[in-house]
Amino acid sequence: MDRRSLPIVTDAPDAPEAPSEAPAARAPEDLAAALRFLHLLATQQQARTAELSASLYALLETLIAEGRLPLDAYEKRRELTVARENERTRAEPGVSVYDVPDKYALTALPDIDCAALLPLCRARCCHLPFPLSVQDLDERVVRWDYGRPYMIARRADGSCVHNEGGRCGVYQHRPAVCRVYDCRKDGRIWQDFAARIPAEP
Image (cartoon, rainbow, N blue to C red):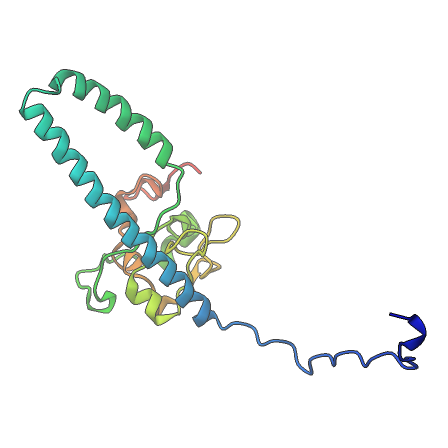
């Protein structure tokens, strides 16, 4: 085409208008729902893996029963394989949920004067990791660790994010684990509870 036949452009085209408002941030509820969906898929995958494992074991048991696979050789090989797989999977992430239907219905809770013991124990129990229940997740009050579903969220120093100077910031909604926990015989907390001697840090 002859360049002389091209139209002459005197003005640059208008730039696209900038959006008047920034995109709305995703609500925490949306993120939680998405993560729970992914975790549901992971749980379903685990169930399918368990089914495949059952089929494999059934096959092995059949071969052993029919004398086609020596039992001693299988047991030795299995022990080695189990040890290897346990070591490999120890560092793999997983989904943990505390199985309790209703934390508010729990009875016979331990009677411990936590307020009087705080100067000694320094709320060490609030550094212990534990999973939340489905009830906790549905309430959307207690925070969980997005990197380790559904473990209680903790600060960089390992303390619970709801620990406010030794006091629980979500006490009325505290998880079932916190409600039933009895520190008196836990060596991580007390060397001697009766004598009020905390465990070594």
